[in-house]
Image 1 (cartoon, rainbow, N blue to C red):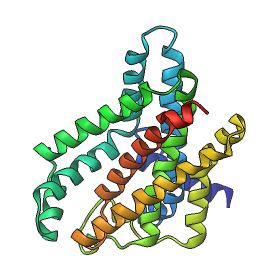
Image 2 (image 1 turned 135 degrees about the vertical axis):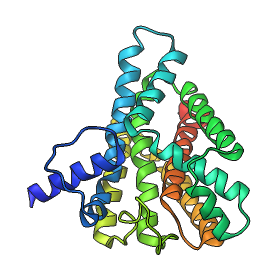
Image 3 (image 1 turned 30 degrees about the horizontal axis):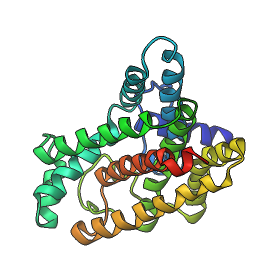
Image 4 (image 1 turned 90 degrees about the vertical axis):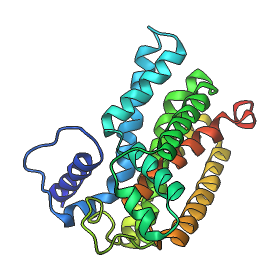
Length: 259
């Protein structure tokens, strides 16, 4: 049982990051599907690396440089996996007017105007929001945001259908439905850093960050369902990126900084 979970963890690590994994880790579709419960745990890792980079380099460089380097570290760790999905969604939904055309554009590896503009703006939003945080809050908020955003994306696999059901896609194994128990485990992994941070600060009201994330999921789910009848791997990446920014915006709000 423990070996199985270790194998699932490394499968998630292999798929969602660029971290080298042991050669004995499997590549089956079943393993990849079951490993989705560890998607939020990858947020711990990515957020932790970004936070560690910020903490370590803050003694050497100005804060603006350190924030940019922490963002670079997270992107290098994932290979810009989710940023690429966000850019594809911007291109697809910005330039397509039918489900077939939207899906076709998203599958195109080339970056268009909508994708370039969207990617630039969302990265700028991340930087601006993190720059507005108190320096002591940046590291923990990075971990919280990366975990919660991946948990938000994970819910699509339980609630909605994959829009490319009859096509060959690297994300198709991930898109197979997960059980309610698997969803709850994944959500538990995603919410845990927030619970620990709220307890550490003695501010349970920070749990209210879950409300805008619910709205993000509701709106994006409705939007994707309307236009393509479900979601794709790019949609999951876009959801992760938007949810991550929403968490940063929540924590940089003057209301939470001053209380």
